[in-house]
Image 1 (tube, rainbow, N blue to C red):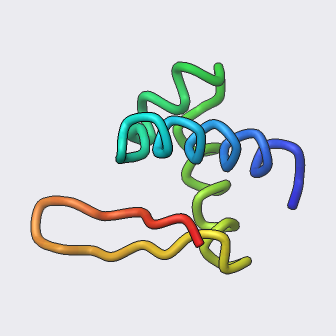
Image 2: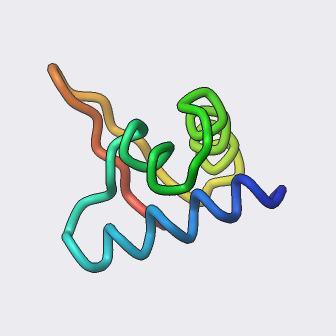
Length: 66
């Protein structure tokens, strides 16, 4: 996992553990001072590596950490 992906994973996991749900892509980008595109790429990489599972339902997506 590259540095950006690790940073996004750690940040989203920590907030998910605290709040019961992960932050949005926009929130993550703002908090980590990254572009939304970088956060989206990191999320795609985490999904590819099996670190998260994304379930799409109408009007929202659910991210689960594995």
